[in-house]
Length: 116
Figure 1 (spheres, rainbow, N blue to C red):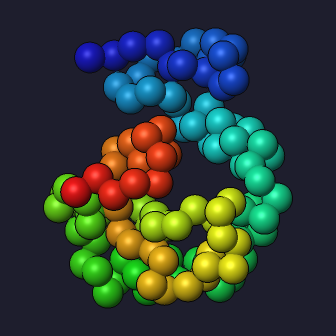
Figure 2 (cartoon, helix red, strand yellow):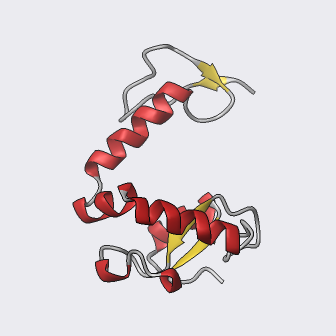
């Protein structure tokens, strides 16, 4: 079912795009940039670093892209202990797991507790 793009930051899509998902590609990229600008400076540095990109790739490869929380397809890497709470563990292999986007977002809203 086609529906209007959600746009960016509460503003409607300037292209008036009708899409299948939530945002057209241009708005999805702009929303990501907007969220990154608002992100904690420590987290921004971590996620932009070559070390994080390598760790993230390695974790997805080793854990087989299976979500630790629900067993579904893991498409992201999640910190068990938040970077805000303990920045020293941001690049610690024992502090990151593969997670699906849904479980990762749910953990953000309900706190850092385990979903299992």
